[in-house]
Image 1 (tube, rainbow over the protein chains, first blue to last red):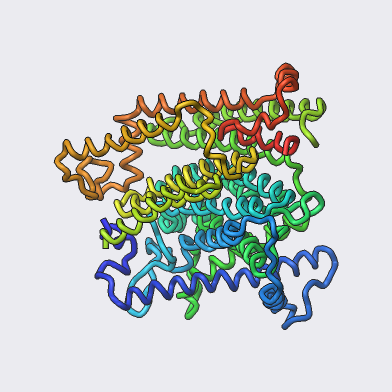
Image 2: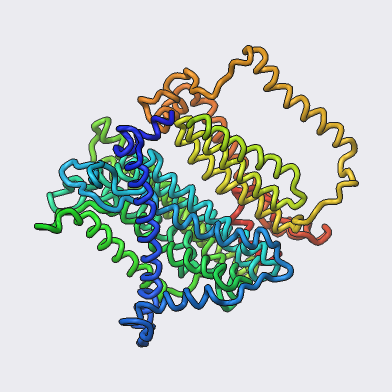
Length: 409
Length: 206
């Protein structure tokens, strides 16, 4: 039983000695540091890109190109006075920032960080003569781990708002919880299509499945193509909502809620929320890349760069998504609350359910040897018709309700 | 090693359970419940049931207790209760009887097996067969041997969803009826699945 846990990583196959423990601790440390540094970078990157978009300079004082600005801000936060409001529930108030920041770290544990996946290589790297995976952990249920941990992240926001003992944070946290719980459903459904396509729940297996040769020899075998883009689009929108990023940042809508759930927080307690908030785009980009874009899989780099090609591809792909996250923040206006809920429950979930059925029908058709074109034709007709009907009905109903004034808009 | 994991997880479970019962504040009770659920998840992992552990965290800790907290916060019952009043007549006696009966049940079950129940993986066939991943095993059993129970449960859940939506829905007639009631949030006690309908009406009530 415990032996079965050891069998998850080739590192532990020959028993666990000092070297194995040290390698594992090393992996923990490296993963942790990568994330912390990427947060430092992400804050700078976001400010700089948005400054560019708004024709400003952005941070430019501390260090070259203002790179050390985040460090300076962090130091400032640490030495600021730590205020605990009188009406707060102290224990929960102190607990909430940790519940927010720790899940943000934990998601990253199942992301494969490197290793070559080409030619059937299962992504094994050798550290000091020991073979292991280039990821902190590879549980057989890696994808569910991502869902589980991000669902725990809700607690941080919720308890922070409640324990502050003031109105605006409570409103912000109520919004956040409803939003995160709603979009978790859409996210889980889109992951279900993924599991159906790859036939595995392990993140590493998903990457190695995607590493194979794709259509016509040059189209990559990525899940985003295999599942037909729609599940990915839904996952991406749900990821934006899960992480409370714009355009779904109603949690901290400044004009309405002051600062949202962390209004009453100051000093390093606020710093922890801040770190979690900027870690989410990084971890979510890594998860998106792992699940839909082949993770560290890619062509090998030439020459002496070959061992780092896995990390190179991962970082390159993550960068694209970080940029998209910032781009969205810089351009899209915030959703209204009823629009947010309509989108989640009346559009994304029915659409994703229909798409799941369509893919399942295609799978069955392939197994039974049905005519592919007929299956696709009928499937699209049925699913598309049902989706169109539901969507038009939903938007009609919500328009009527708005006109009747039943929803405060 | 396994015994060690068991004792740590069991201690977490028990501490959480005691916290649920003994906390004066309902929010602290709910948080203790999360602790218990995590302990159970760890026990599942130690039994090589990774899927059950993940589902335990996603469903119970991630959704159900969140909704408990939601209701507690919105209904404003997050205060210490007055323990000297019985809302239901004779509920204490009934609770004691029910508690003793529930405790007697596992004790009787253990006694009839001769006190030799262990934490070892039972020989249940495909579910715990280490050659088949537990996700696959559970899926296979659910969709073959227990297909009827599964379908019945899903229909039950679907009915619950529809019922919750109907309860939370504001039809013009229902709005007239609500006016006669004493002022209190009407839509917040709806079920989990009505979260969306809830959330849209919260802004009005909160």
